[in-house]
Amino acid sequence: MRLFGALGTATAMVASLAAGPAAIAQADPAGVRGTLSITHTYAIQPVPGLQSTIHGNKFEATYHLHGPRWRSRFAPPRAYILTGRGHEDLNLHRTDLYQNGPISERTDMFGRAFGDVRIVKRPNAAGETGALLLRLLPRGRFRLGLASLGLGEYGSRLNFELLSEGSQPCYGPAGGTMGGREVYNQGVYEVTEIDRCPDAEPFPGRRVGKPYTPTVWGFDIWNPPELSNPHPDVCHGRVKPPVIPANTNICGRYRGGRVAGKTVVGGKRGYLVRGICIFYPRGRLGTRLPEPDDGIWEACSTMDTGGFWRVRTVFRWSFRPTG
Image (cartoon, rainbow, N blue to C red):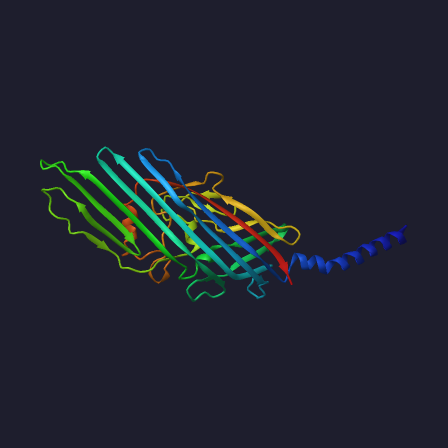
């Protein structure tokens, strides 16, 4: 009995050793390759007294990534640095109409950008952003960090414009109508007069900011600019209170050596975000936010009609081992 027990134990050890290299290769591949896609959808949240419509309503991005295992004395266990290429496309147009008797106002927000991007270890040129880090964690879990998608300076060229026109009656004895136009376009905020009351002084107009060509990265799109808005928690598929920073890590389980899945932030209807400026473009020289003297700060405040958005983001990923 002892002989047969020893033979059984030896046979099991031989089988384990024979399967060992394949199992290790599957658990700790030399590299990974796959795709990551992000679809960010905007919808209108109805507000009493405000008629809102949306035309373009999406940001879509697909990234093709690959990378070897990170081998360094400073590297975390089972980590992979992912680089590659991608394409980002933003098409957004919203119109708000406010009418209260003779008082009317219309505000349009336009955002259009598209372009190819490169994900590299050291971004230093236009259209380049930082590499992503994938970690295979104990107990079959993983974490993929997305924050580096916003580390590059110059992203896709962006056409970002706000346009507002309004009018109201003059209440003086001469009657008449007064009206004006506000425009923010490529860094410059301008206010001009369309009509004025007969007994009023001419309005000389106002101009704030310097013209430049703004850019945008996918990472910036996910983060609403207002401090009162919730922040996305990508890992858990939900949103966080405004005081808690955004969690931009995809996390979950992997099986059979593959890392694949889907997560949705915002559920079926999306989460609420306030303000006509659903995101801020990159400022001059690719800074994370516009400079203090950029006209966008005043434009987003004065041209806001009190509307709300519903935002829903879908992440899909699929990676397989290589090597």
